[in-house]
Each structure stands twice: as C-alpha cells, then as structure tokens.
Image (tube, rainbow, N blue to C red):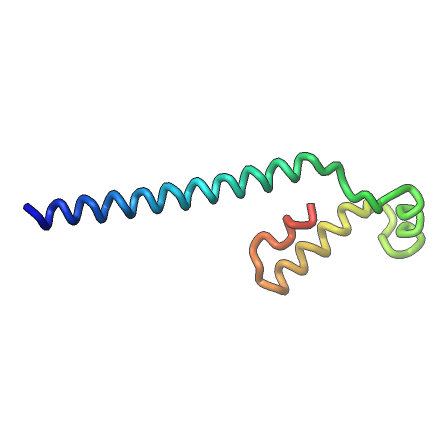
Length: 89
C-alpha cells in the first residue's frame, strides 16, 4: 500500500512539472505571437531604401519583403535551425 502512495505522489509531481512546463511554453508562444502582430514591417524599409534596393539589389517585380523571406528561408535551410526564418518576420 505504501508503494502505491509513493507512485501516486511521483505521478502527481510529474504532472505538475509537465503542467508548469506547458504553461511556460504557452506563455512564450503567446508573447512571440503578440510581438509579431505589433510589428508592421521593417522600420528601415522606407521609400528611399526601396528605391535603392530596386536599383539592382532586388530583381524587378519582387518586393523587398519577398526577397528577405527568400534569404531567411535559405539561411534556415543552410543552418538547419527550424524556425530561424520566422524570426525575421
């Protein structure tokens, strides 16, 4: 009977630890999601910088945001870090 009580207590501690871990993961996810919605884009990407990039740094017909996404996706693939590209947006 004593062993059953120990097993129950151990299970309760594991569940509480898991619950705390899940809470922290969800809090981090919510903070990350809310910070993404607050951002409206790249502050440095002004009309002047768009014109500069259009003068040969970004192919015609492609927006700077699209090109940044392509570059960040490629960096994620090269580095092998899942989610790396998402940090740019």
